[in-house]
Length: 218
Ligand code: AMP
Image 1 (cartoon, rainbow, N blue to C red):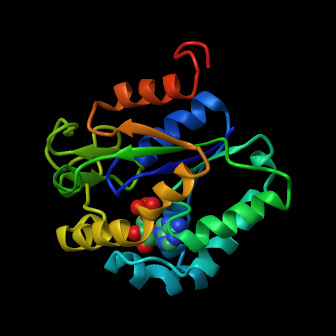
Image 2 (image 1 turned 90 degrees about the horizontal axis):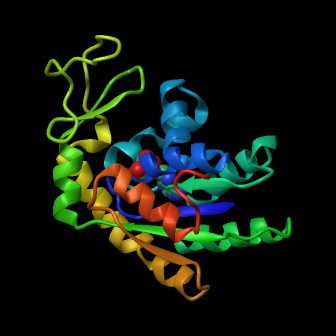
């Protein structure tokens, strides 16, 4: 199963991709996570992209596609993948299509998780992260003690690109550069529309149903 998750920042692509990866037994590939771990490890790539991520802009297409190409060569992608945050521009989508075509592969479906801008801003400004990987939200999923991780007790922090100014920039980038992909994949008959303004599990069930998978038998 080769899937792409589309949608504005904060629509829940990462959360749904992780759930789908478990259910469908294919890897979750997030270009954002790859960039963030390179920034953390202070690699050459990390140094190149850190300012771009902070501003809410996009990493150049050639750099991004090269990273995806390398990742897809790993053994675990044999039976498919869930792409989260890639492609994000029309040139990336075109390059991706030819990259897959070279191996006689193609995308099975593109899940477009939609969410209003006002909900995106509310969701993202309340997000709190823990260095251990747990994610909280001040309204929908607060920790037991404010600002402290339930699992490991570390202080929670706000991801740099969740700051309001960056969120507004990321939304603008999404509308300008990524939303044309809905049309690109609609023309190929691949788009599945999903309402992102529902609880996590309801959205997950909607996706499984749209993919023709039984929720308890995947
Ligand atoms: P995400 O975690 O998917 O929201 O990505 C975080 C940031 O990483 C984005 O705001 C971009 O700066 C960068 N990024 C992630 N994926 C891509 C991509 N496919 N093309 C360009 N930049 C990307």
